[in-house]
Length: 244
Image 1 (cartoon, rainbow, N blue to C red):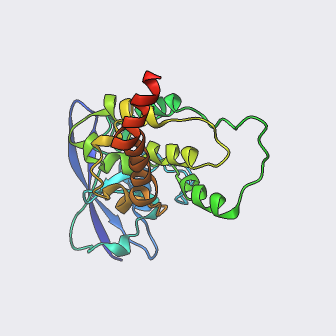
Image 2: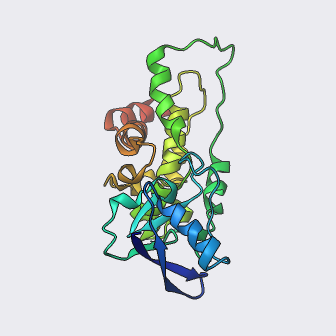
């Protein structure tokens, strides 16, 4: 039987080390299967977060060979088993233990977003193209792989000033909903720092649900913010009207 060698981070945010484990490989195995083998047979105290094992809960996010992935969706067939496979916790969030991170900051950001607020006397009728437009954003499973790979969070640690791609996706779903009455553009500009994003598309590349985060969410939101706050003609007419 083939064997794979895994080098897994063990420790917490204060200290840790990489530990080698040899795991027998069977057909169809994914990285999470290997971690479960280690937990069951070699190191029962290894900490790993998971739930559905079907790539729908987003719990088992980690960095596998340096790339944010869902461990339950990452097949061992994709790797050269002659090389060591590195598994580390997500870099952008504090480590609790081993592969488990504290992602609670994301939920605090989520609480600040103005919820869906229907227009007064709304007729609950939508065109199919409007449904299709926002439906893509509903696929997010909150694995936070996009948050982890975003350089604004990962390299510059601007969490107090930046919401991150996951929440730009959520805001896009609300802003583009034809029955919603709220305006979140000022929040996007001032609180959520959408201007910090330089549209490298790294978030789109790691999304396990294939959401076009940059093209379909972030860029349209940036355009709306620019139209609202930086369009010279609109700024001119706003000044004229305010004087009146």
